[in-house]
Amino acid sequence: GAVVSQHPSWVICKSGTSVKIECRSLDFQATTMFWYRQFPKQSLMLMATSNEGSKATYEQGVEKDKFLINHASLTLSTLTVTSAHPEDSSFYICSAEGQGAEQYFGPGTRLTVT
Amino acid sequence: GENVEQHPSTLSVQEGDSAVIKCTYSDSASNYFPWYKQELGKRPQLIIDIRSNVGEKKDQRIAVTLNKTAKHFSLHITETQPEDSAVYFCAARFNNAGNMLTFGGGTRLMVKP
Image (tube, rainbow over all chains, first blue to last red; front, top):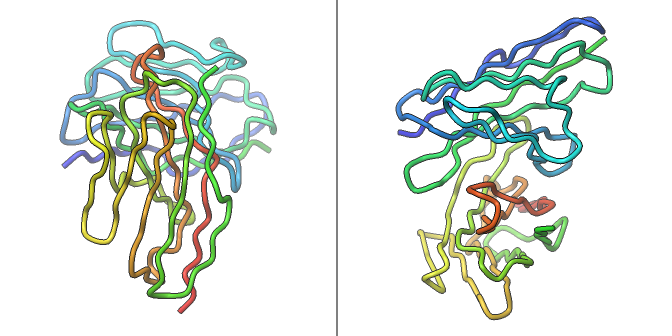
């Protein structure tokens, strides 16, 4: 149980284009999902908290107009990186919150912007 | 703001030895402390967690201890095996931050056969 999927697992896009990443909880419902960014050999940095049916809460320094989050159902949250630039290249990981407030992570999406 | 410090950043042990990773947190009202294991290129996996109403929890070779007074918690791995090699992250949930987790900087554990 508590499986979280993420799609795509990797994506290469050109500078200026937008990329959408999906995070799904496969066998449980998640009112809350989280989006993290992880740089090589570094820890997980929380970008935003995604709540089903309401606006996401962004961490300080994260541009909400650049990283659009939509949590339209209890099993799906999406992160759209708009007008991507090379500095947005990173590993993006989502997590979904279980009943006991544990977080279960997706496999991550490696974004490369050329 | 909320802060979680993790030490050491790297740890090398011989197979069969024990490994201990320590974390300290800043908010005394924190109530949930999970530990994650992340292998190279893979997702973080929850391996054990502890809530503030207990001082110790054990699951086979893995144990976590919590000292609320000192605001620190530790991960103990006994009889280490090469497959334990990974990066381990501690985290804490701060009461005034919803259900967000703040992560430590990670510990790269290497178990030499």
